Image (cartoon, rainbow, N blue to C red; front, side, top):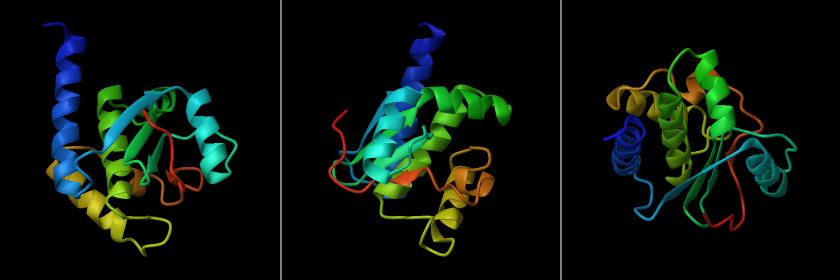
Length: 145
């Protein structure tokens, strides 16, 4: 088995476990995209004309992750891309489970911190960046992966 295949299997396992522990919908899906694609979604659904790392779409139970942004963040925080993708998955799933770090007085941050420790991840998004105005939950139906 190749390293890429093994990592893909590990990411699927992580997704299932993170979906379970966050309470996100069982039909939640994830889509990898580039900065151009996520920038367009961020502009359409949130009014921010910039790429972001992760967007969640509760209307369709989808999480969109920019692999390009994730790679830059992984380098900045000195860990593997797969670790950063897991952090983004967890963050996006928490949004699908109904949490919103922009309005919940720290509830999502506390939950994300507890879950990332439980799942063996380094610092979560809400711990690293207290204010993330361009990332978050997109309102409306959202895209289909």
